[in-house]
Length: 115
Image 1 (cartoon, rainbow, N blue to C red):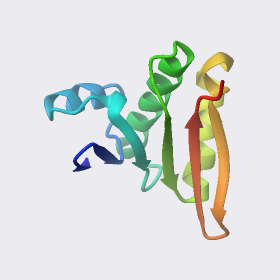
Image 2 (image 1 turned 180 degrees about the vertical axis):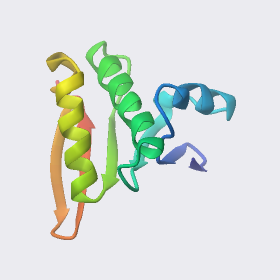
Image 3 (image 1 turned 90 degrees about the horizontal axis):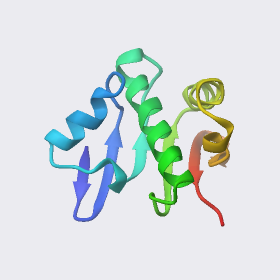
Image 4 (image 1 turned 135 degrees about the vertical axis):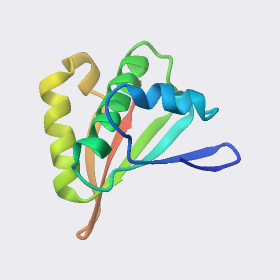
């Protein structure tokens, strides 16, 4: 986690739901994370982000997560994250996930709630 005052930038996510405990132990609230960088698709980097995507989408659905979260990474890892999220999460949650291309060489995905 890289923190600059009220901005938190998470790099990778460890394995599974342990990310929530690790963030809490480090003094961070996962609801304050707005930017995530996923370096590659290894399980020890990827599954915590999948868990975080699930939590963000669930809380957006309940109107308890304000704003949006941006997930940065290369096209392959973002495509995989989107595909797995689509298979494992409920449609009411995945409706918040959108893909955008910033430049031909750098992609990012947004999770955002639109009213």
